[in-house]
Image (cartoon, rainbow, N blue to C red; front, side, top):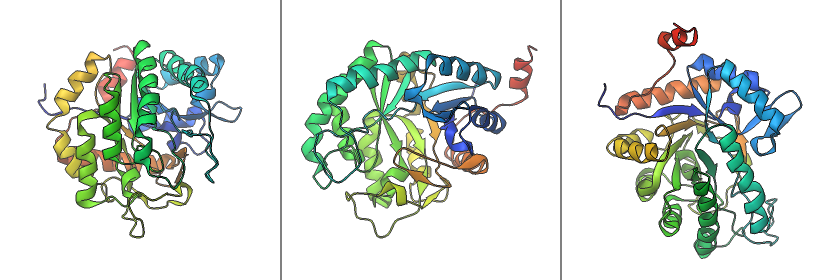
Length: 337
């Protein structure tokens, strides 16, 4: 058995499909050799739906199809936490939902979906503070809400992953790490995403500092990369729908090689903690946005997802990780040999 650190490859399958149909998504992922996917948007013939809007019939149909293609769900790619903290007009289109309603409706639904798809992970976010205000002023309010979300996940034997992303309170690694520290809950983990930091102007040592801040809570990676946006200043509001600098993870400014080289030293311990919570290991989720991205998703196409996966494998090979893509042994097993 290899003594190299191990990660599990996954990705947002809707990025791989021109029309986001389930069969397109699953066929591309199976052909690429992936065995896991994060479910976010999917088209079952009646239009594209977010995972949060799936019916019981939809879920049954998806599960039958994913079994045919040899796939399992790594995480529910929910938009939990992408709503306003306060009911104020700040010039954005973000919606506000009273938190108790949000907790009992959206968060509960996300937990039910995780059970239905037999995953232990729900991806989420750290809420929108009023545009133009200092996010540090809203950390306490976010801690209160994320604490309750995480506790609901915990009571459902699930883990909540908090992703770093522009325009939210947890828009950088330092603030996200502070939220993690104050919530202080075993069911909360952090998700690193290099492009989400680079597009805000974090590069070089500044970017590595954001990774270092997140490291105590880091259990999960989203992999997309971005070329250095020279005109951006750290902490400013980002128009996510106009960002066009996404590239494979070996071509951008996200320093994945340096970050993964460092993460390799703690990966076995991180994996052990995840296994204790019923999670099979450290997921590395491709979310490349190679043909475009926005506030609630992105698109790479079948070819773009292939380009992104090969780039990721090159970086993982260089940084000393083990990972698995389907091989003939998997084919034989699927045939009952």
